[in-house]
Length: 290
Image (cartoon, rainbow, N blue to C red; front, top):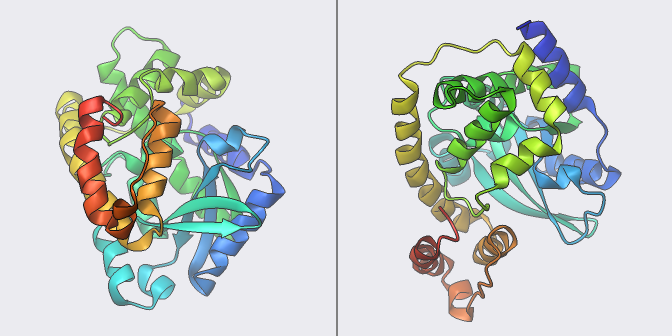
């Protein structure tokens, strides 16, 4: 039975599941970087499934009340508002991470059917955790936002997965979202995500109330692909202004997911923007990113 309350309960339980204490400590330290503007820190991505975090790059979203409160105005507030999210590196207690910053309002919008690109709802249709929250109201706000992600993915995917069962719809949805960004993941990544916890995905599909699509599904995916590729390049370019060692991170991420052996040259570290723009066409030709 499709039931939004049942979906919220599933999301609430998943978000409240415990995280590695070192990840929780890192989340609290990330929240402290913006003081009273911090609302919550969400832990997501492949590291959720890892018991050994050393040597990995953890992924977080820092949700803030608004960008001016987080940054005090200036370039960072402008960039986060115009081309969200801002992405920053972070090191704490020997662990490395990156965190993206979104306002509470932007996070809610980008988990839902009205989002202009797939980047947020595609990630939060997958498991995530609240690693830190300022209060219970912030936790409930995260539940409400994340509860929009799975129905959004399923609504867009279902018309493109005719004849598929629930797991097939999920797989098709993730495949399509990967095609909308410059991603280094292998072609079987979508199937592996669903195979890691098929009962979780069946349960979410069973209760999710699917929103009405604003446009035809095929037209929507065409739009997501065109817009997503452009946004990926723009966000990568912007990240080089906020992400120390961004070219090295880019190479590490691609090598890890695509099995390549890219080495960053010293001149690319000195001029990271030029280095990344020179690197990108070669990666596209080799199929390392799609």
